[in-house]
Length: 258
Image (cartoon, rainbow, N blue to C red):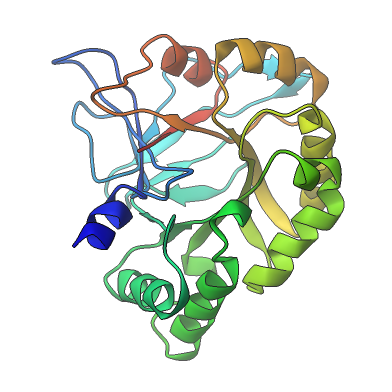
């Protein structure tokens, strides 16, 4: 039962949180949670994206695209031009057959977003579950959205090697979204490496996890691509009311983890 609860907490909701009785948006990240994107007044599942209300701003002379939510298809359009499902499954603490079975079951039940990370140590199982689901006709690769992350320290110090290792472990052709897991002394270097992988067609969208106003203000002028997603701790008990509007005004989808 504890594992089931921890799994639920590893899903992500992206939601715009203001205050009690106001709009709430959430997501799930480092701990793997339900992934949901939303701009409505109620939070959904475990991960949710906050819709942007203002025109996207420019960073490094590149204009971002306003995030648009479609609640019929339960997707949000990222500034990278790709659609991301609102609801998803975070996989922190899942390993071995338990991980494979949980991911396959989620995909069979209609979940189309899977969140993992190098630090979770389960990318191989995630990839195996996805390939099995494809082989069994449960899904097609283009139907799902897979997020992974690289971690500070040695992974960001050698980002090309670390990014390729994530791709190799997943072994699903390409990654829909790759995030930097936390700020680090080599985060700009690592982000630029991700930008190159996007140019090479191996990653479709890139973003950040656990980045706040001060970190974003320093980081964004140093990179060429506006992040498509920022995944932070956001939930009813930790609402980040100052951070969410700041991120959304940049044309970036907010995703809250818990």
